[in-house]
Amino acid sequence: MTEITERKMGLLLPAARKSAHVVDPVALIVGLIGGPLIVTAATFYAVIPVFALGMGGLLYLVAGFPAMLIWFARRPISSGGVATAAFLVNAGLSISVWAISLLFDAGDMAKIALFYLAFGSAFALTWGGVTGWIYVKLCNPIYQSSVLLKKGDH
Image 1 (cartoon, rainbow, N blue to C red):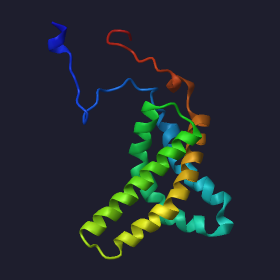
Image 2 (image 1 turned 45 degrees about the horizontal axis):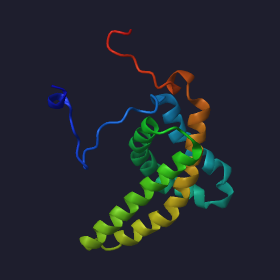
Image 3 (image 1 turned 90 degrees about the vertical axis):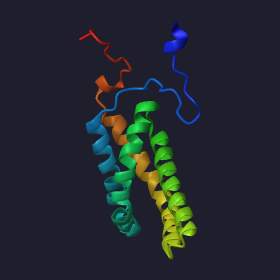
Image 4 (image 1 turned 30 degrees about the vertical axis):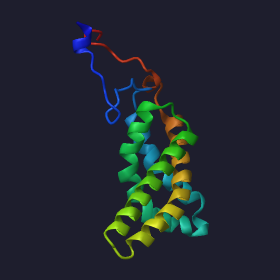
């Protein structure tokens, strides 16, 4: 009888895995906002990080929030892991925009996408590393448990 209720997932829709831990929303939001701000404040004398914050800050928040939410829920958190995730999201978005702009002959959009790939990846690594560090420092210990309440256990 279990073969009827057992659900087999395909390659495109893998079976859901148990999450590594529950995400601390306050630490996540503070980390996502604070990471770029701390890096910019620490390196403002170089001027380039100030422009990077203006050019990529909103993209970092819009693309980074859902990506980090998924990443944090499925993997153990470390600064290096978050930096890797930020790099992969930036590179994936930049390469996708570049390919689409070439496909549809979108003018200078391909050059802009390559610019974001080159410079944005470096900032994504540093911003992501600091975001991960902030999250680890601020994460409430109650969110570090992987034990979730079952129905009727409250």
